[in-house]
Image (cartoon, rainbow, N blue to C red; front, side, top):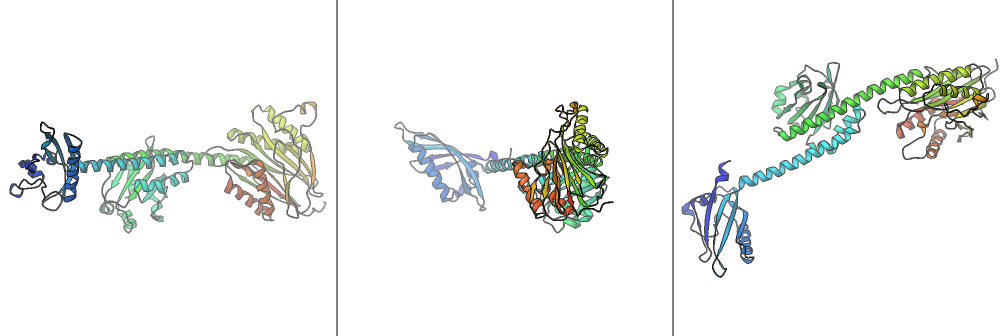
Length: 539
């Protein structure tokens, strides 16, 4: 306890004579010498008029309400012109008739007390602000599935302002170097600093090496300890910084850097919250990195099961597109294929196996090859689809698949369409109009209705015609389904995009793929476009 808490004196007020006696300790509290005080109650040389008025009002109310005890804080003006907070507590003494005639009490220096109270209020506000920041960033990180999501959460304007930082940096350890993947709001992008060696004199490199946070409290410390960094930040409004390792299971996967315009150190409260924040970021970053790695691996696996090239077909322009959903390691069972057939014919297929996992991709690969084989053997479209359904049913995978198969005679434009629980094909006519083909359909593949056991086919055949210059579109539901929208709305949106899209087949496929990128992405998407040219010459 400091001396300020021991500075306490007593007083005794004679209300009838309007005289106040102060003992030597009380005189010291009022910053008065004995020869400066004549017993006047106002202590005029020290107590400002507004404070006297407040004290008089307080005592008068105590007298009127019959109270015996009162207390109050008030300020005085010291000899050197500074202000000092005092606290007084008095007791009213009354005569036999109940009239007050005397006040006795104590007065003490309360400056440090009120300063500590203000400090506690400030610390509480800081704690509330920092805790709110950690809560907000943690909530944003909980939804992060990519490294970009993590960096977006760190650059959140509200979080940065609550943290008091002017910039944030995130570094990821890659091949013995620290790769800085975000540079916050100060525009501190320097190509030479994007990749730094772990043994270099940079704060991020240091915390990765030592696995310990580093707090920098002045510009001088930046200059002295990290010269390679100082030459890039000397002109920026940066006076301090906090760098923390991002550790998961005892291994450093990156580093977090925060820059501040303020001078000075970091309180224990701030350091604890920053360590908590860095731990949450480390977990989210590792999860996002694993999601991206696993998704890229799964997507490569799925692409390996799709045709490596689309054959050129005389009399037709064909374009295919595939877009994977960005959902962690999940992959789907969307597929497409183009099968050249004898007699100027070509088979077009597209399908989607139920589920989003490696099993779905494996079933997709088998089903595509089986259907390709049945068609290539010369089976009719309906028979090939029926046999593919039986094959999937007998795999005993509890999976089903939707599929559309179209066989096109390019010399006549005749279409034979078989549909297994899939969306109807769409055609853009020569005049630019676009509509779905009214096509009969059957059950999804893998769901038997017994027709194949009776020697028949499970799928009806629909015939149509595609004139020269017209474009056929078959696709999976990822192209049209949107959260919060009906299927009909999605089909109308697709029809409008096809109608207003480019004439060129490849350009139209790109345009439709971009449509998914703008509005979807929750499911895989595959599409196949074929524009019929003039009839090929007979061989």
